[in-house]
Image 1 (cartoon, rainbow, N blue to C red):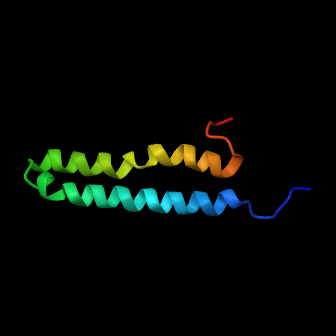
Image 2: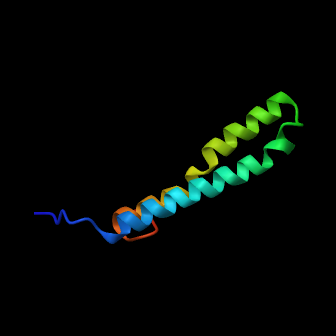
Length: 73
């Protein structure tokens, strides 16, 4: 039978994910006045990329939270 007791990594991982998303949001919001000067399609591309790019650092963090290892198994 599996141990259903929550692991400390879950809380730490959740806090780090929220911190990362918050920092990413502040960064994108800080760049917004400069991005607004760009042509519409370039601005739209920036926000699409910025909206997806935060996932890259979260993936290994999720793996660590679940397994204790930074790499996928």
